Amino acid sequence: MMKFGFLAIVTALLSACATTPLDIQHSELDEARALIAKAKAAGAERCAPKLQAKAVADLYMAAHEYSEGNVHPQEQADLVASSTKAAKKAYRTAKNNCGAKPKPKPKPKKVEVIALKGVYFETNSDTLTAASVVTLNNAVTTLQKRASIRVEVAAHTDSRGSAVYNRDLSNRRANSVMNYLIEHGINAARLSAKGYGEASPIADNATVAGRAENRRVELRVQ
Amino acid sequence: MLRWFMLTVLILVASPAFAASIFNGVENRSQAIYADLKGNNSYHAHLARKLAAHAVEEKRQSDIGVARQLMDMAEEHARKAGGQ
Image (cartoon, rainbow over all chains, first blue to last red; front, side, top):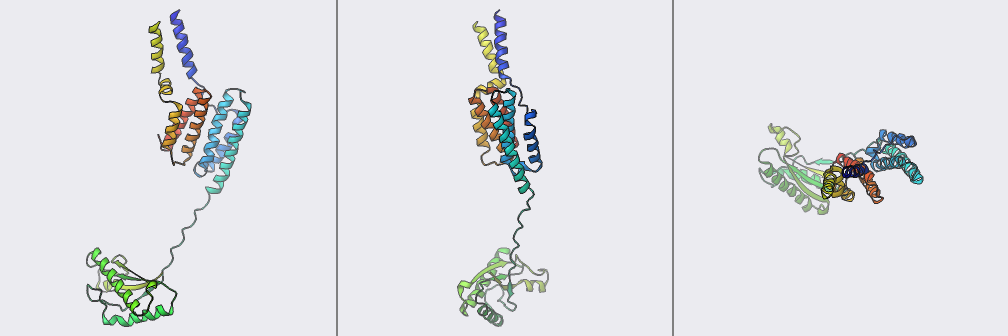
């Protein structure tokens, strides 16, 4: 007698733990299911994840309500309506967002470069040679004529020497040219200086001619 | 009598699902999901949170079986979302 009682208790308790799986195949859920599938096909999981998740979660809850029979008819209807509405919205959102082409990246502005051909320095120095004066005075005239532009004085080296040394040398040379322009009447507020070292060659550093081309100063219009 | 009672308790506690429901309540599991998926806005993360919220609600209505079922689903989706 005791054994039967024990078995009855255990069976009752274990069966109370068991639940029927949430079955979403009810015919009342056909429309919601179809709309969710349509939204998914349109990419809603990627482009409208929150709405699609709501549609699916409400579908499961509606399935649960239907599995209980007609205990909460209003709740059943509300959940189906909520799932359907979310799925429709997810579909519309996905249709509009998923196919949308990403905005094209703005093209980088083409920088106007005024090459200062004929600007020379003493070797390994930022001291301008006398031969540079003509070119630099032409640059002053250009900047006076084009009074609205701001420029960066950009100096470059060839690849001989270390990168750190070349960067420092080009910085000093850029500042040297900028100072010349300021001393000859160009407003300092219109000028900045930057040394690029050997990082932006325009010719082959393996040849003497190439290295000479790479050692250069230019004005980059901002 | 005492022996049968202790045996019954032992069987119930040994049942993994039942043990989980006792020692790791639906609310705790729900909180763990929310914490793990904080800032995650993927579909699976949203679904995991929704299902966890429904599970907590079902538990409040004393529908433990469904609450646990929903929570299992929520944890499955949380895993897919990269949490848990």
